[in-house]
Length: 88
Ligand code: SF4
Ligand code: SF4
Image (cartoon, helix red, strand yellow):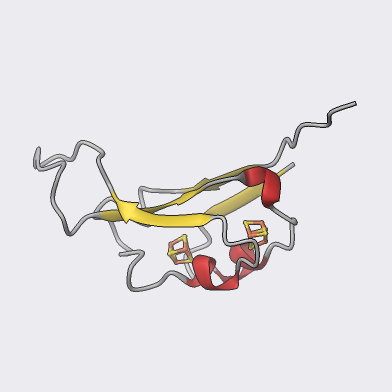
């Protein structure tokens, strides 16, 4: 029987990334503490209020491969803004 992971990892982009309060390139604690390394730092392609959705200075972190998550909660505990939630 195949058991599919139900792990969901979310980041509040209204605070971290997308040109908001925290620039993830300057923090990136979640990326450093995650042993399976499932976070990806990349330029954001979201549409912004200034219509400059391709601004090369706008970045975000996306959690990939949630099935690799060990539920260690190091990212949740280490995030200075408490914007990460991990549920399963
Ligand atoms: S809970 Fe642990 S394994 Fe899962 S994303 Fe966070 S740091 Fe990585
Ligand atoms: S640890 Fe939190 S504030 Fe820092 S980059 Fe990751 S999600 Fe953003």
